[in-house]
Amino acid sequence: MAVDSRLKDRIAVITGDVKSSGVEEQIQKLHGADLAIFISCDVSQETDIQQLIQKTVEWAGRLDIICNYAGIAAELAYDFPVRCHTMDTKDFDRTMDINCRGTWLCCKYAIKQMMEQEPREPNARGDRTRGWIVNAASIAGVVGHGNAPAYSTSKHAVVGMTKQMALDYALDRIHVNCVNPGFVNTPMIAGAVSVYGGEERLAQQHPWKALGQPEDIADAALFLASDEAAWVTGHTLMVDGGFTAQ
Image (cartoon, rainbow, N blue to C red; front, side, top):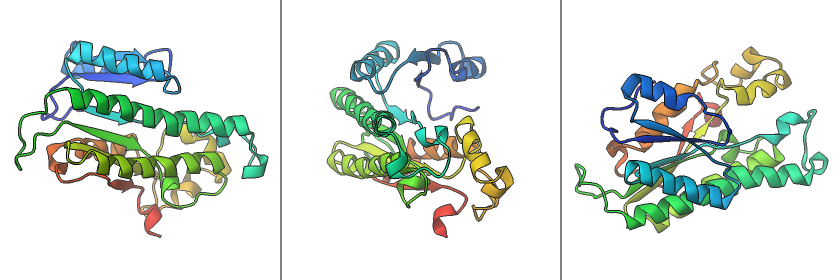
């Protein structure tokens, strides 16, 4: 894991797990013990989100970047096929609480903090950026995706809120973008691998003929949270091995 030399400020690693994810430990080992902390947060709880923003600012002094990646795919606990009429409403509600409402609330309190603090120093084009927001959507948020009635709905909502917020906060120089991964080799898709007939068959659905890697998504987010993306906002960046180009 590398932290770009342009991003020298502290990093707060926030997760829904009650235990450390280990990411902050990797950052500390590579870049110094004071460069990362762990904060546990349930993004379905508004007070948790308020507290994590507050704790982050108390520790780092300000908030410049937030990446909203918390998400679930409740459909993976079902026997496929999963369609609207066969899905439990509570699973739909839980998906929307985390994937959609949780993202919206994180944006809300991050933007509130960004609006209250001094903008950063002018970039090459003279803008004094207030901050960067990178939301996590999905290929299922851009095209219809079978057997994902809750997940696809929630990710379409993330794409919509990203565009809407980008318009509202453009003059405030807050960038709001999202990354849209295809199938990435993470624990989350482990359940989907068997459904699609194995990893190789799943990879074949992408023109690149390979699954994505976590680093592919991290690199895309790093771009969207940098001065190199100074004129980019409201964008949904596809990182999908060509899946949605088909």
